[in-house]
Image (cartoon, rainbow, N blue to C red; front, top):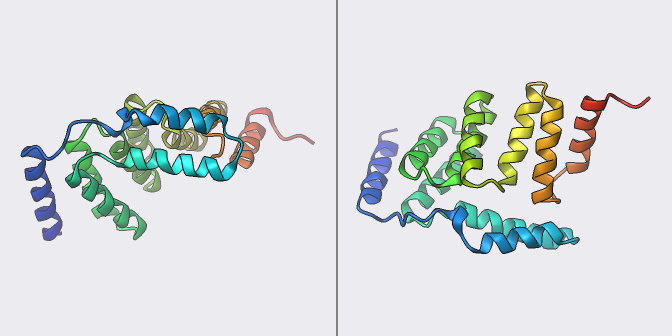
Length: 186
């Protein structure tokens, strides 16, 4: 844990020296074109390439220090090292509050921790910064569903699908939410 504190201190120092550019990834001019192409493509393979490009933009804070913190947080998440992931994601949102993906990844972590209230707060911030964030919308739908708000969950998930018609398992999810809203057909 001591090395993590030293790492965070070094990145804070670097950020204060101005290595962060101040431009948020969600302002990248290529995003508009990527979203337009994603909405109209009929090819699942092409959609995956476009989605990957969107995620690449979203994950780039245009700051070497923040990008490294994000990379380390993702490794911690993958290895289920929750305290380290949370510490790193807290540092990211503190250092770059305009970086939507920092909020989104922390929302994901809170969701995995079943802290839905904190996850909702971070999803709200993510969507303030990037209203087209289909991942955050999908997460919001999951939380609403967990709270039994099936109609709202369905509506939000459909918004996510308008942005990314190729979300994984979308047919099953729409069907399950629709059954919760309308009741099962006999």
